[in-house]
Every structure is written in structure tokens, then in C-alpha cells.
Image (cartoon, rainbow over the protein chains, first blue to last red):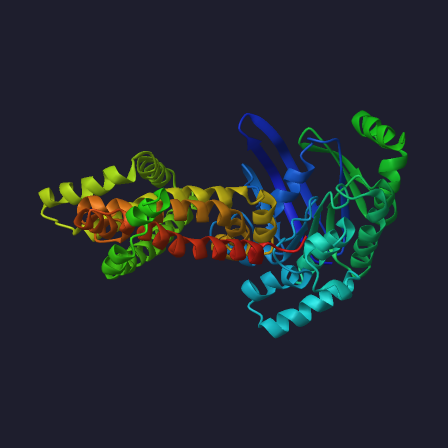
Length: 246
Length: 226
């Protein structure tokens, strides 16, 4: 196996006086699914957003698929094509159809013709089970369907890594399953994934590694069985028991 | 003579109306020219300023805000008079038409910049982030994702402002522009009869009513299905 596809070292992030990331190191191997858990405000989302530079790290190094993301000479728009991201609030473009959402970057960034982009876009919608919804606008779709369109928008660009920032937190409970289903099939196709989420059942079944963060640092990490059954740190234990209480 | 006949004789005097109809019509042409110039240049300049402002270059933004607030607080008439009587002292002598055009365009620019800016900032941050995360550049995100949503929000306030300011073309009378009101009032003083003024009022309605209707149509066209 080659080196890690995501290699973040010594990441720090300050928001004014707030020190949100305090020296995070994260290596993710190809085809690995890393699950990031931790209390709110622990820096999980910020960590994800530093990986594709939606957030500018205050210090540290991020290399994704061999590209130094923080090097000023890096074409960040080109690099971001390789890093798909899915947001808690979907962030679909409301003035476009599902297909329009999926094909925008294919046409504008990947330089595909409209016909090519439409074909790839339809294939991506097919993969998330929404081939028949290509002409619908986000307002005509349920939350679960919207999130699946958002996943299609990201995977249509054939990224090397997918970042999921609490992809099911804004969904009604009965819609969560369909999104997790898509994530599971993505995982089976060999996609490298970093997932911030509170879906512990999914973590237990699908994750290769669980990373527990607290107060801007990684407290401990390991295979899900180990982290959930016998966490070594007091804070991890407290968090896990808190979550499992309900 | 009944009171109605007296009223008709004064305000709906057919003889006077027919005599001055050509003058009023030529005024309509001038008003249309002036209004079209003001709308096109004012809104284009306002949009350009809003786009410049979205780049977030701080000294430039301060400058934009100062200019915009200046033109929003000055009465358009004052701007017209300043340009018409002030610029000759720096060896520029704009005609009344040009003075009125420039003044109203500056005022519309200022208001429309604020309207466009409000529309741009009203588009959720997540829209920017989603687009940028797929590799779209700042400009592509602005053009394909943010502006189409911002425009939809700006249409109603923008049409209100545009109509209000283009009606200000009537202020051109002060600097001898022969637009509708100018023609009507000189016809009124020449004929000792206010009927031309009524014709002028009618001309304004005929002119601006379609604008309101078109604006409404654009609003419904731009609304996306929910």
C-alpha cells in the first residue's frame, strides 16, 4: 500500500481568541473509512474544513493525494475536485434542478461538455438512487433526497476522498437510513471517507477506525470495537457512555 | 355654464390639448431617452460596485460605502444643480440633459449597489462553501450560484427604486430639459390653461405602468419552484 492519501500534521486553528484545533495529526489510508466523534465544539468540523481549505489552518501541513493543500502555488480549485464534501445542511443550489446541481462543477471545473456532464450527472444520481429525480429542484425533494443529491454532486467529480460533515444531523429520523445506505455503498466501492457524525451504529458497522476528539485535539483512536468497548481515556469513556445512554 | 363644463374647459380643453400634443409627445421621447439611459447606466454601475465590493478589498469598500452613502443622502435635485452649475467651473459644460442623466444615474447607482449588495450577502454562506468545495472559483461561484439567487431577491426593491428615480427625470425641467413636465409646464404658461399638465400626467402613467407590469412578470418568472 502507498502512503496515506490524507496526511495532516500539526494542524492548529484559531478563531480570534478561540483555539479550536490544537495540534491535530491525522493520516488516512486509501480506501479507509475514518469516523470522527467527539462533543460539539471539539473541532471535528473545523478539522474537516481545514482538509479542503474551506478553513485556513493557522499552522500545520495538509497533503491530500500528494498535493500540498497549503502551498500558495497549489491550484486550490483543481485540488478541491479530488476532495468531495457533504454538508450538514445539504447546501444544494435552490435555483437549479438536481441534475443542474450535479453537473455545474463538471462543466465549469472539469471542463466537460453539457452532454458529457449530463451523462456523468445522471450516472451519479443513479448511484444515489435518484435517477428519476434529475429534473426536480431541491424544494421538491425530501431532506434525505436532497442530501443524496449533494452526495451525487460530490462523487460526480470522482474525488479521491470524501468528507462528510454531520451528513444526517439535519434529517428526520426516518430519512437517515437512505443516506447511510448510500454512504455504505460508497464505502463498498472503495471510496476513502472521513465522516464526522453521531451515527454510532454506522460507525460500529462500517468504520475502519474511530477517532475521538475533544477540545481541539485527538484524544484517542482505534478500531470501533476497541473504542466503543474499552476506551482507555476517561473523556472518551464519559462521551461514549453519554451517547449510549439513549 | 355648469361646474362640470367649467372643469372641462379648464382641465380637459380639447383645443389646447390638440395644439400642444406634439410638444408633449416630443417630451415623452426625451423622457424615454433619459429614463432608459439612467436605468441602464445606473443599474450597471450599481451592479459593478456591488461586485467590486464582494471582493472584500477593505480600502476600496470604504470608498464605495462613502460614495454610495453620499448619493443616497443627497436630494437628486441638488446633484443635478451641482453638476449643471458646478462643472462649468472646471471647464466642463454638460447640457441639462447630460446633467440630469448623470445625476440620476449616480443616485440609482448608489441605491442599486446597496440593493445588489444586500442580495449577495443574503445568499447563505453554505452556498459559497458547497460551490467552492467542488472546485468552482470565486468568480464562477458568484456568477453561477450566488448572483442568480441574489437577483431574485433584488427584483422587487430594485424596480421600486428604479421607478422612483426615473420619475426624477421631471427634475430636468430645472435645467431646461424639454422632457414631459418641462413641455407641459411651458405649454401651460403659454396657453393659460392647465390641460397640458393633465396630458403630461397621463403620459407618465402610460410610460410607467408597463414598467410595473413587466417587473411583476419578471418577479414571477424568477421565482423557482419550491
